[in-house]
Image (cartoon, helix red, strand yellow):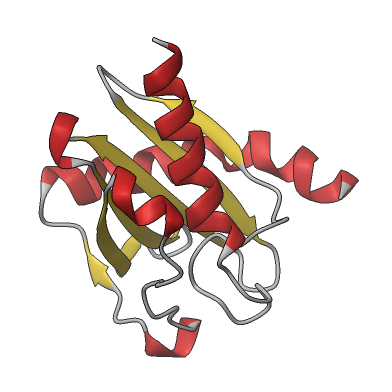
Length: 141
């Protein structure tokens, strides 16, 4: 149990510690206010509000057991109910000591689309319904 917690915590630290300034960054960055939402099974989500653009950054993790974890980054525009894929990578325990990181897109790099898949619809619903919880965090930071 402790080993699994350590691996998950380490993956989280690696993905956020390698981030740069989050002004133009379309993925969740280190020191950026975020809310954790635990999903079903071994899946979980981080949400962060971008107050400048009124968009929600979403980072989903899907545990794949011995194969690592998928990390998928989205940006959701709640005003027009559209979603953009901002990043995807597979994280493994061996990556914890590695200094390689995926390219970090800016908001201008994204291509938004209306949701057509259930995962996009669920991502949009989760992000837009939980932005009220994030609004209080964003005001205090």
